[in-house]
Length: 364
Image (cartoon, rainbow, N blue to C red; front, side):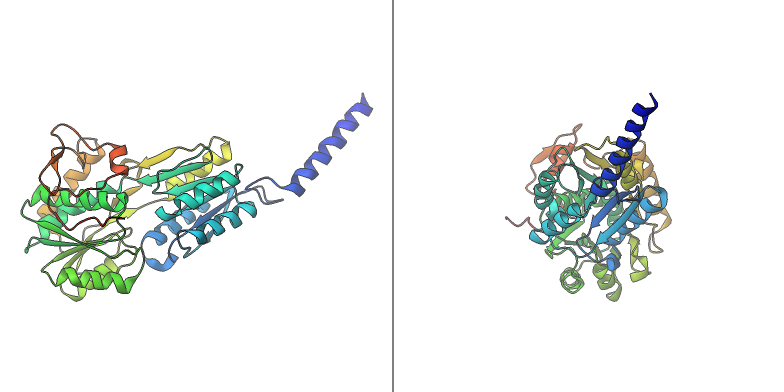
């Protein structure tokens, strides 16, 4: 009996040594921690999208002692991202998070090549057993900031510096415009495409073109504060994006739709650690704290503050849907009837503008 137990002990020790030498996906030899890699499309210092994702990474590390993280900045969409995802998977990262829409197909390909690694694609719609999609209902915050813009404008010309003509951006423009028109049916939202995520010079040029046609409130879907800075320089108002950009134009800044990624990243990491990760689609809203609006600036009067607070509470209670009908498109056709709403699937493929938007969606 003693001899048999000894053999079991020997084999257990051999197995343990082998596991440490070979390594377990996502666990650094001897460390026992889940290795999590973040891949960013822009620099951490962009003051917007990438900055907020990195705040989420730091939140994850602070709240989960069982993880260690790294981040790769300014990775271009396409072939560059595929190379980075592959490199990270080979280095033993067990959870890889890509934070840009254009990473979708490269990540899906790499996920197929590394079935023991878990992947998360932010803002996309393609999934696999080991590849999850995740995003937030930022359109809730867009709608609320639209109310602020609609109550603020005096020219009834509002400028929107748009990034790329993809459904994510289109539904943001639509939700914002619906918010504007809910309080000011005479106002119009004029769209100029920059075709950038982060290019301050080009985004400022787009913002200036909107100011030149009489826009007195600007908003954006890019990662830099260039639009806020352009509005401030012209003595106009601005609504930022991603983070509280008030420091870039204290008098001009009205508010912004903002992200808080930390709790979602913690939730995902815990799934990986528990072995319950699946190719789900996470889509969290204000009720989960993933999205919200930045504190209202000094240019927002008390009546507007009260209205926004009431609408926000209605959203949190489930009594206000930013895409509730009736909704008409630019041509005046009813796309969502009264009593209906634009469901999640329709939002993910949205390719039309609501009534009140001036501009068009470029064909691909």
